[in-house]
Image (cartoon, rainbow, N blue to C red; front, top):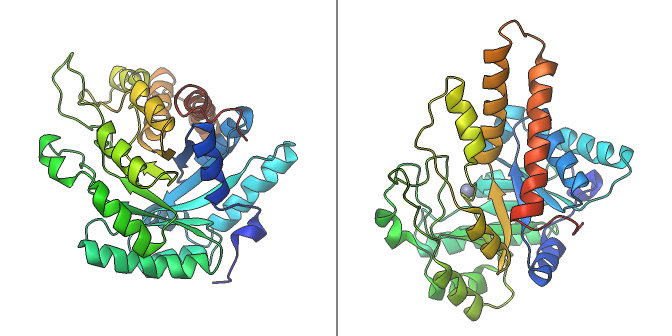
Length: 325
Ligand SMILES: [Zn+2]
């Protein structure tokens, strides 16, 4: 495959983005995309709310789009932004890279930032793998995110996950020995749309802000990342359930907790599930109300419009990144 650098694509790495987010007490949104409509919606929503943005895809999302296609899609997004007369800082990030080879391949095909997730390895192996990616990335001015601690999975009991919370003392050593630029930590967020097993009317457990505070104290000014941070927007869950879906027990992180995190050392907040829910809700509603509809522009276009609204709302009301581009 032909090598492409992110600078050729008109992208930036996350270094300056995070410095500004730290100083301005907001978080840069990191939205996942898997297709053209999601990518367009993220860019347009962030242009409209004047927010810096990290567009990210996992290894499997990159395969889904085809790895040769991704840099050209993103180049197209940059050209669209210029045509709209806008210029917001835009980073392309690999979400949950699991091998050095994948990170390297992304760096050589236009990614400006990569995550190497060695959190399932031993502490020593996580350091070795992260260091290897950092050395390769920094030589090309690409930034690296790593992970320490294990996030609760979709069905995990929150109490069972307690032993996997990030240990602040390890953060200090990990950052020093790897030279990593940012770190995803586990303080009670969780991947997926079913984050907690709570009974109706019960609140999900609060995030462990004490752990975050201790990390901040030991490593002032170091950028922290929150994964699994969708709020699982109830209006979308309701629409999905109303139009034939089955997501009754879906629950996420509260907006208030995320606003508090955004005002701390948390510089990047990942949002994937809420985007999936928005699209699914719109499609279910349209197909239920218009069974004869078969023009993809009608339903995918409507999903794109809803996603633009969601991105603007998140930037303005939750991450507080609106107006910062
Ligand atoms: Zn994640």
